[in-house]
Image (cartoon, rainbow, N blue to C red; front, top):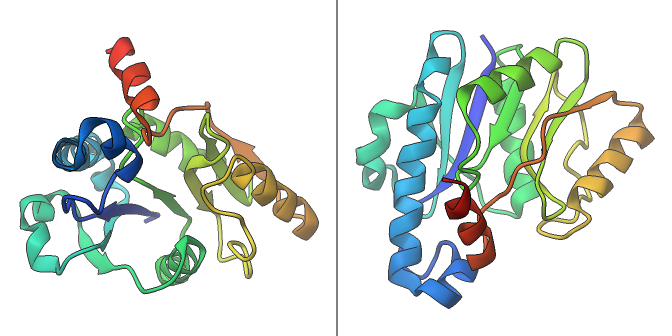
Length: 198
């Protein structure tokens, strides 16, 4: 079965959602992110009948994630390094199962299991799938097979993240598919935009 990597951090005050904390305060930002972890993982549960759901965690020992333990099939610790290194290692390990791999974070609250299923469906005919975010990055990325250097040289957390990654795919001749554009919640404006739609 295919593998879904869900990247998440332990909601430690002062260490998560720091841009949101600039307005809301560190305590409230961490509390919100704690809720988001539960919300995102709960929405993904329908996938577990035919998808391996891996919680790819960081920021605390595994014992601190006990609250969410039943919501994933396996828990893998993220290695040291920037996001590209952590994704590359996670994808390599997940692709050892021989099936497509998709990765998401836990700060896009519009994401749900049908959209992830759509991503896996698109990997039947494309090498790569992206879920574009309004800020120029992406909330989802997946590959149909292990692609060497797929995450190498991508500028992270910039307005050019997705465009640079698409250019890399073109350079290597990897076919791409894209999902609807959604919003990651990083700033107070993102949060207010999301709340206004609820």
